[in-house]
Image (tube, rainbow, N blue to C red; front, side, top):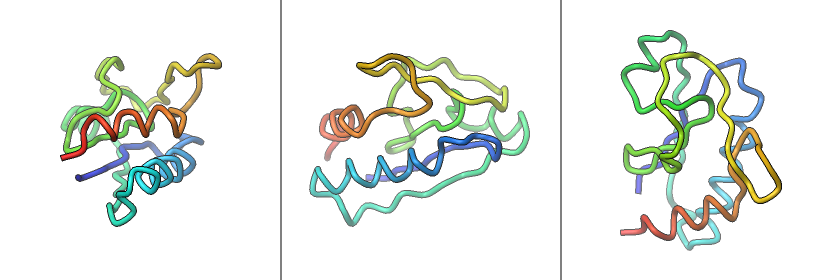
Amino acid sequence: MNVEILHIDECPNWVEAGRRVQEALDRQGLSGTAVTYRLLVTSDDAAAVPFAGSPTILIDGSDAFPEGARTTDLACRVYRTATGFAGMPTVEALEDTIRTRKH
């Protein structure tokens, strides 16, 4: 499984999102899975990948939460959670997504 986090420098949530992704991977028995990070600097960078705002979490090249619309705007992303909107998904939501995408 390949996991990549697309982010912009101004996003305050990408580091914590990475921590949550790693925790979700660990809980699913995938602690050896590397999480990589890609800094997007220009709109062209964002246009070249399935970016839906920062942080966008890709699993095997696809958005882990595809309800987010693609954008070339270098902006933060909002996720729906059980407690309302947030700047990153919960560990539990990440676990659910990883579980369904395990090979």
